[in-house]
Image 1 (cartoon, rainbow, N blue to C red):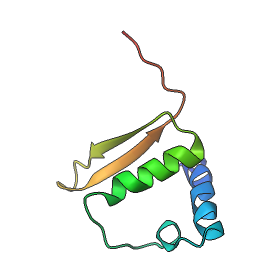
Image 2 (image 1 turned 90 degrees about the vertical axis):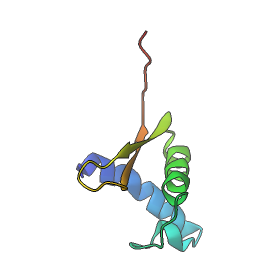
Image 3 (image 1 turned 180 degrees about the vertical axis):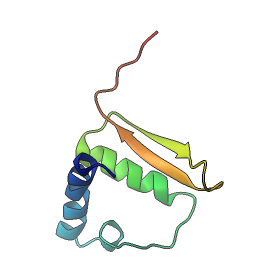
Length: 76
């Protein structure tokens, strides 16, 4: 993962530590179908992102990568 992405996500971890909310500071969690979207929403809110997106992982069917986007522009 690029260092720029890791640096931005440290703000989310810091928030989890400040609020003493273990899911944002723990490396491994029991997953469910909503967990990725919940964390994407939290990160997007804390980082001021424009949107969140879920991409299928082509190397592992059934797994997904969640992305937050910044400075999004729509083209027609």
